Amino acid sequence: MSDAKPVQSDVYPSLVYDDANAAIDWLCRAFGFTRRFVVPGENGRVEHSELSLGNAVVMISSPKAEFRRVSPRTAGGLPQALSMYVADPDAHHAVAVARGAALVRPLQDEEYGARGYMVTDPEGHLWYFGNYRPGAYW
Image (cartoon, rainbow, N blue to C red; front, side, top):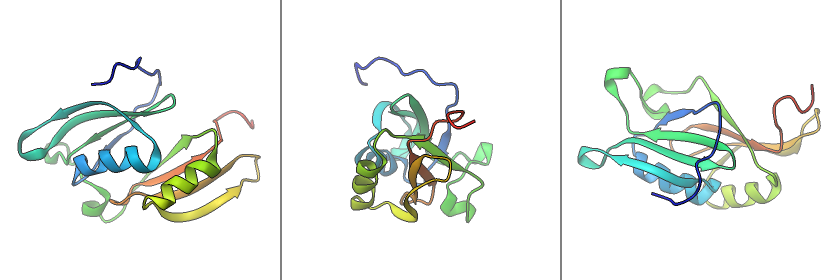
């Protein structure tokens, strides 16, 4: 566990990965997340974890059949995407793509003034990284 101060956020997305341990390592390496807390389970499972990027926190776990929680691979698609703030989308994009993020939409200036790009991770979760913050352009 890290000695870093807890981050404050009001939404905590929880994502399921078939190989949650590998996903945690990859998300930290490719997207710059910081591992805060991991609760291991039997047979290499991850029962719960918390990763942070700036003020954002995402929780990663192994599949949980009792709650019908499966990875995008198992589900055959996904009903959501995560939008994450990064101060320097160009630098973030360069690292993420170099480390294996699959580009869905290239780095671009948005019509509302932000700059960002969209990728998928190795198990198919969809991520948008940019310098957009909700409400900034209202």
